[in-house]
Length: 228
Image (tube, rainbow, N blue to C red; front, side, top):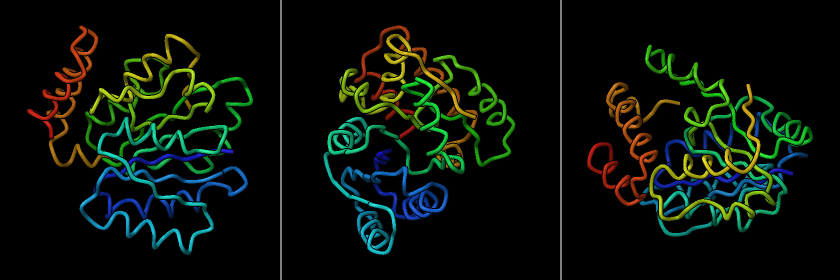
């Protein structure tokens, strides 16, 4: 059974669409629960989740913690009952029957992995970027591709590093690549807000800084200065 964990903050305009999509594109027999972890939303995110949950066939739970996606995802994992954890961003929509694909990979012995990226944009740079996500190379990984992992392995990895307020997905996945096999299975909101070339440039700088050993706090300060 899969526990889907979705960290949110001020996602009132997106979260119901994602929950509805999950309901229509997965099988109840595979989904133990959907855990929405709120980090202190100031909009109607929590109310919208609660209203949707009342009429949904999915087992949807809303829990809260302090802001910070690593902290939110760790809390969701601690409360999960499924043997497989599936971390999903609120603006990322997995492929149809994603649950069957995940379980099939787990049965093959692939204990962690993600899906390829496909942006909901025709921007040439994004099309170029998404093409690279088919390759099983650590540099091409990111949280928007989602992450599935055996609950047991997640515990062995000690979860996400809560020192990171950005880059937490890449930091965790880098540890996975060192310790365990990783498999790749076959939305662009922030790009629209900030600009595709600018965002890609700053993400590349963050990757480079991390590879050079820059601390989590300095990465976050760079992010706040240029992208927040």
